Each structure stands twice: as C-alpha cells, then as structure tokens.
Image (cartoon, rainbow, N blue to C red):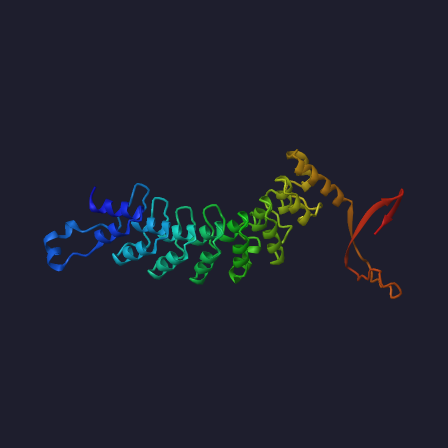
Length: 316
C-alpha cells in the first residue's frame, strides 16, 4: 500500500500521528532527492469517491481537517454522488468543521447529484446550529432538490421543530408558504408535516400564515392526515367541506382506503364536524341588553351547530 492509500486509511481511522508523518514536508535538500513522483496525493479517493477530506469532515475531526487543508486538499472535491466535504459535515451537524470548510472557500450552495445543498442535510437531520451557520453564510433555503423539496420541506417532513422555526424566521422562506406558480398543485410543507403527524410543526406553519386549504393533486393537508391516520392533525385542520381534485372529502378518502382504529376515530371526528353549518350574515345584529349575545356584522361567517337535547333540536 502506497503513501496515498496510507494517508486515506490513517484519516479513516483518525490516526493523527500517522497523518502528520505522511504529510510532513521534507527538508528542501531531501525534497530534491525524493523527486515529484514521491509526493503524496492528498486528494486520493476511495471506491465511493470519498477523499481524505470527506472522511475527516464526516468524523468531525478538526485536527485532521486542518492538516489536510494546510496540505492543499481540494475543499470542494466531489464523491460519486456529487457530495462535497461540507455536505458530510452538515449531515453530521459538525459546526466547527463546517466553519473551517466554509472559511477555506467551500461552496455553501453547491448541489449534489440529487440536487441537495448542505442546508438540505442539516435541516433534514434537525441540526439547528449547523443550519443557522449555513444561513449566515448566505445559503439559499429556496433551492429545491431533485425531488422538488426545499430545506423547509424536509424539516417539516421529519418534524424538526427548531429548524422549522429557524427557517420560517428567514424572509426568503415566506414565499415558500405560497403555491409555486410553476406547480400550483404541488405538495406543501404543511402536507408533508400532516402526512407524518408532526402537530407542533403544523402549528408553526399555521402561525406563519400558510393556507391550510391549499390543494395538491391528492387534496389538502387534511386529506393527507385522514388517509395516514393522524387523528390529532385531523382535529387541528378539520374542515370537512374541503374536497380534493377528485371531488373527494377527507371522509370519502378514509372510507375508501383505511380500516384502522385511528381511521374509525377520524371518521367519527369528520361526521361530528359535518353536523356544523356555516352561514353568512345578511345584516348587522347587536343586542345591547344581553351581554352574552353574539354581535355580528353583515358579511360575517357564522358557524351553526345543530344538536338535539331531549328530542328538541336547538340551534347555537
């Protein structure tokens, strides 16, 4: 095994002393005797295309990264999947290695073969500090990967509440809460959170102003939650009148596809909610003599609940 392979193996095993010995610069006189052919290839890659710097970034070993960068390792070298060392550091949430790579000139928005930038990986895995650092270095949270997902989409899909909060605080993310002009029926962050039952993420998205009735080809987030048996999400998003592109309500979908205990609870929730009607006030109404009365203005939407007490139908 030559020195190049020795270097790669030493970095993989985090053998700092061996790496130092291999990378140690010979004295000027000795360098002439050794010749250029004996110089170590610091950018040698293994069968997966990972260089020594990839492995050092993956392990988060700052001393190794420092030695390799000092030896002129290529900071944006790609592996067989187009991943750079910064991708691996972001995936692991290693903020100090990330800082070193960024300082050395690594591309903060460099995409892998799957279209992912480092922010996709740090967001998906819930690394708040790493995501914050990437944003501070002008990472673009609006970049979509090959699957059409942004870092916010992935954070919502995997329930990374802290990262979702961080991304929503970015002005650049506000536009992502609106349907894309090129894909008005595309899946939204809310659909992804609803499908996976991430109730806290859904609350954050609603507070940020996302349209809960936004439609994808399969319907709204409510349709997704009902189909996947996410009872608490259904309770939060409940609007039984909303239909998908096939004119199906959430109850239609649950009846068609699911038979679990969760689906039975969801069916009952939807049936109960379907007993509610909404009407629009035609004129103003105010009762100054009854402080408990409902004061309304023309055009207000009023929810009317119908229920029976002792065989007498009452309206509230």
